[in-house]
Each structure stands twice: as structure tokens, then as C-alpha cells.
Length: 164
Image 1 (cartoon, rainbow, N blue to C red):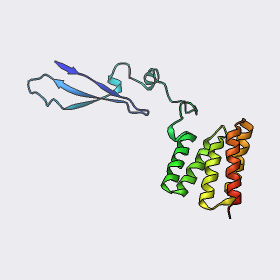
Image 2: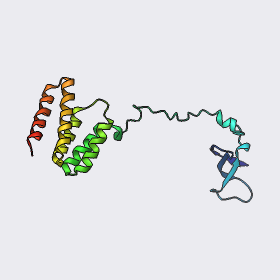
Image 3: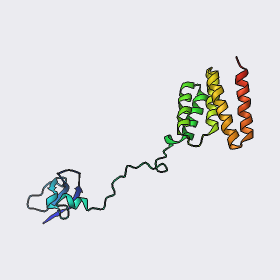
Image 4: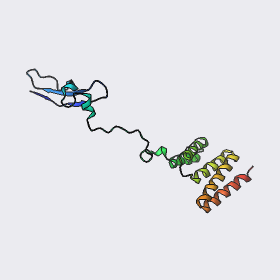
């Protein structure tokens, strides 16, 4: 009497095999952990590649889906947080890289990112770059109708401009 429970391993290519634990009742018992390899041609339903292709399988589409692929590192807000934390730690080079990545990923033109990067440029001693970013932030805020934020960016711009 033979009892075989098969676990089918199917791969793209010419060899399709099944590995099954063998529990065979005979006059001389075999070890319980022995395995037997059976070619797919011996397994009903998997006798050809066409049988494999008829199985209910959904292959990946490899199309970019923005909503499905918004991992945390694909969000501008995540890079903004990384930049802010790096500024707190005094790691200005990594903060600058994080703010630049956040600005690259930002689709809405978030003025806060330019404001933060502008202030970082000021802290790093890059006055002209700081003035450019602060002016950009003020322009975005004015266009969005956020007059309080616009005034804050102008105040920062004036402060940086008055420094040596």
C-alpha cells in the first residue's frame, strides 16, 4: 500500500518536478523522511507547459501605480522629516540632501520645503542660495493666498539679506 502526498514545485522552463514525502508500507520499512522526485509527466493535470499556463495565476503588470507604490521613502513628507531631524542633530550636509529629495518628490510645490531649505542654507553660510529659496517660498505662499506664511518668509528673507 502506498500513500504519497505531493507538494508540486513548478518553475518556468523545461523541468517541472514534484517533491513528495514517501510513506510506503512494505515488508522492509523505509525511513519516514525519505523524499521521492516525480516528473510532472507523472502528475495528473501537469503533463505539459500548456497545463501550467492554464492555471489561475496573475502575473505582475510592472506598471507604475503611484498610489500603490507610495512607500514611506517615496513621500516628500518623509524626506522633510529626515531633513528636520538632521538639522536638529547638526548634520547639515545630510539635511540638505534630504530637503533636496523632498523638493524633488513634492508635486504640489510646498513652500515650507523651500523655507526650510532656505533657512538651512543660511545656517550653512550660503546667503545667496538662502535668499533664492526664501523668495521662492514667499512666491508660493502669495500664490496660494497664505498671507501670514508669506509675511513670515519675507521677514526671514529680510533678516538673511541684512546679515553680512
